[in-house]
Length: 139
Length: 149
Image (tube, rainbow over all chains, first blue to last red; front, side, top):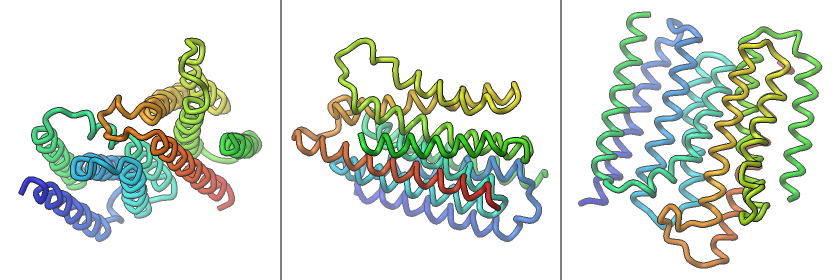
């Protein structure tokens, strides 16, 4: 049960990201480039952080493979969110997702209370999503 | 060692293009591109220096961070004064992160990673080095492509 829960949380996160991407793709004409840069940076960083920490807690013996996987996931997420707006937001999201993705498995190996850290990370993720939606509505 | 030379030559090409064309584009474009290339290249050079040099000497301790500082200062000296701070900040941040990852790769017991065998550590080093070289080539390609369009 303990190991199934981590994979279930990862699946829920990926579904949230894909749903948010579809929502942004419908209204991308209303968003300027400043907000677009911030959205691509936050999304690339959050998806690579979640991938790195959750996968290194699930499979602790494959450090190199998980580093490569989380870096690729962060690059793809940042690039596809930045591709909606501009070329420069594309490059910014790609670089930021790559740098956070190379660092995130090291955080996952040194934490001492994994349950508390996972819940804190998900609360942080949902709060950043709510902040982005509020700032889209107000712009 | 070969990968280090390859990436150094590539960074030299990007720097030449920057110096030639920096008057054509606006401020935001130059700032974004300088941020991207500074972060990635200082990170990659810090990893290489940390893996290549022996860690016993006290002199080499600060060398990767100073390399990151130098790269950031050199790239951001093209632009105006407030952007220099941005370049130096990103360069130092990349240097510190590269030093951390290199130290963990050299000694996996720092992070409680259960790898004990000596050949496995060497294999991990080669995989990560080849992967970061690939990433640096990818970002350089994107930046050189962005100057054409």
